[in-house]
Image 1 (spheres, one colour):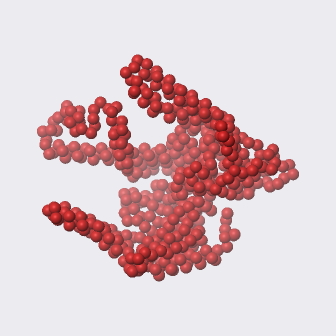
Image 2 (cartoon, one colour):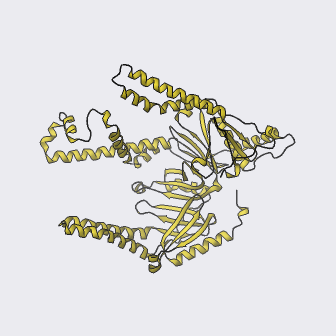
Image 3 (cartoon, rainbow, N blue to C red):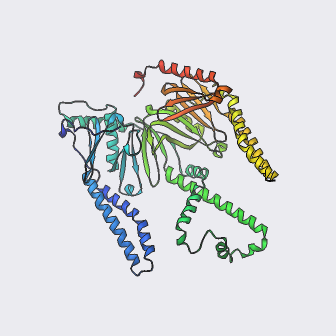
Length: 519
């Protein structure tokens, strides 16, 4: 994706620049954060020594000072150059590396602020090429104004919004580019979606998660030696609560029920609290705007992100919901884009909204929600029947084993499980559907948490039909749709339906003059 580029033919035309000097100060504070755990470890190991606290503080200061020194050297040795066709970054303290990314390979430029750089008014500029991981390019750190300006400069030159070759050379070209950038920046933005505090807290209530319980349990297992008693021994808990809860012992079996209910309530409180905290940190100040450059999304409390998704790079839209929130009419909307967003090709543009709030965003991206008269098609019945039979065959040996062990009541559990899975397959057959309009492909999936994917037919890159041995015998196939930035598939449809969809999609692609589509 990237390569080391030759220097510009006219080196004076583009001057190398350094990042903001406050950047190495912010890095130094981040280094001090990383020194906290070693400080705690040293302090705990020398807790019996009279100078243990001073030793821990001194150790932390040494680590922080070393981090500041390294950050300063890195800042001194890092420069970036915005050329006519690429952006070039040179870095390295002892060994130098020069990396160049052509503008045409840059799919998106996002701004990100973690807590400490945000206090200094700094941003990290990320140039996303779609390669992911270490192949992405990032500049740490620029001022907020410079980050915004650099993003617009790169986008303008990527899209060809420059003054062109002028008689005055590079200065005139830069001036023309900045003028075009200012003109674009002054165009008003339309707010498509936002979340106030009430909406954010409501969203957090639905983000219930017990994953934090597992994390806390792992932390207690690792750092249990720091506690005054062994949390994994029941006798220790009995001693701890002997005073306040001694009267519960006289209740016998009722006390166990009360204890179980208290435990469930505690898990519920922990799950809801974790959802509220996670949602608040991630989606604080959520704002989606439609600008001349595309969809601009800003969100985050401690880590603030500012991402612009060009409209022409949106390949598909996905509407999803949860098991509980669907009963209250709440849905989420995300874009499938060529660019990457924190390791995912799906950009969340409306995490918690009503259908009437989501519909204008879909229309603004060039897609249309399904109409009431859309002809939906279901999959093959045999596909669902085979799945139900396969689940029953897996559970049947368990039921037989329980009967052999003289556990007739336990033997009924796999039977009930098989019945439940059979009903689930019947429900899925009824709700998992697909439809084709003159311009779009619709795929509905999900059982308790339904989802809907919408893709424009001309943006699908390939159509593949696959069929295994059982499907060939029973009469169903899988249709795979190639989509830049994501995948779409229809499982268990009839061969006739698969051929119909493939023919229609290929016909739409063949009839489209892609040179006339908007860039």
